[in-house]
Image (cartoon, rainbow, N blue to C red):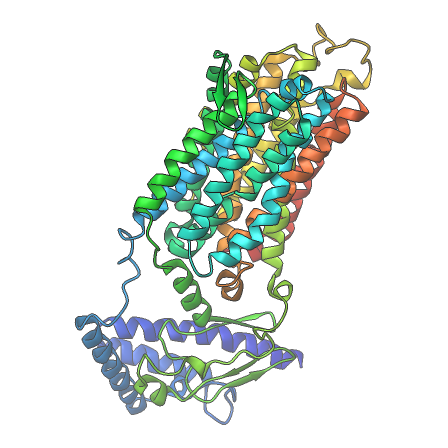
Length: 581
């Protein structure tokens, strides 16, 4: 058995090289040197038919005249393909670039505004909760309630986008308008419940799943990481301008009347809600007038790639890049799969529009549960995103609570820090998109995780392990985390996490099976569910840790985040080979 396995693996490697040679032959002129080297290679490496492997297809046993016959078949197939290309019958993967440009731009703008909506309330969250008469630790619950709404609505939007992008897009924006109006009106009614409910409704209108699925379905593999980097850049802009807008809105304070709602108050706490209502109202008009349904070229490319590469019992059986499958009647049987193909000549003579049922993979039916289609690389990416977002939310969303009680900061101070965070992330994200052209996503993921770990260690206050009698922090001690060190650590950790997300999201969109990519549980939904789930848990952790000890909340949040990042690095290193996409 071991000997047969060794022979089989050698055959697979040889088959891969052979098919590459055939592909070169198809795209170039056949000369005498090609015939001579190919014939000699097959003769001396494979040996006679009696002593050779029984699995090799016919065209691997070519001898002189047979090779010429097979080349003639390939030439005829190529001429037929070129004639179809001349007639315009063959698809051009790049033909839809300009057609998908405007919808992609609107999706990126939507991502920017939505991220701005998420971050604009963070500088004033602790102050708003106090003004409504609740405990400051409830600020984490106010922020995370939006994430819980997103978790519920994401599956519905994912199913909806199987048929359309435009309609769910408009519906989500409508919910965002209603949710922000409820959030702003909570001050009038002095109701923390209305505040949380408003954020929850805003979460129900989350457009992130629509944005992510659009990128996964309509962008090619070669542009996927760049598109995700643009997605990250849009988020970075929103993360910067959201808190920056909160700082500006804090300068205004006035009253006005709304029909049926009565007297309203505009200030640094309610201003973000009213401002986002105006912004989303303008954007929904733009989407209604300019958004068109795109072609899902990225999904088509994923299907083509899966047809050209089939995994059999853990061994990768790589087919030719030609539309027909492997020649000769080859059957490789295992406990889960059965691969059937036709003869080389009949395959080459078939039309490209023939029945795709030449390759049959048994063991994965459409009726099987979606969770059975979640492969190990997909699960690993989901786990990485979950841990990363939980770390980010527990650190960034707690800024107003931590800095108010630790350093006595105001809304202006917190908003300025978040604004600087977002501004620095912009060049970092652009650099990440540039690096993706030269390095693999898995390589860059580990490097940026190390950067995140460095930022978290800057936030760890060792002096609080010894003394925490002061109300704020142990000012004057060299190892204490003062305002300057807190800013540096926050900048490093935040920019690293945001940049790292585009790499992990890119890997996820490439390793997800086409059965999931085309269905409701697609890569965009999976990424959104685990990302929002991590953020929801992170917001809940803030509330729990704040109720335990407001004085030591910084260390109570940083220490778990450090362990989660270390676990992420270990997971990537242990599974480095399966993330090669």
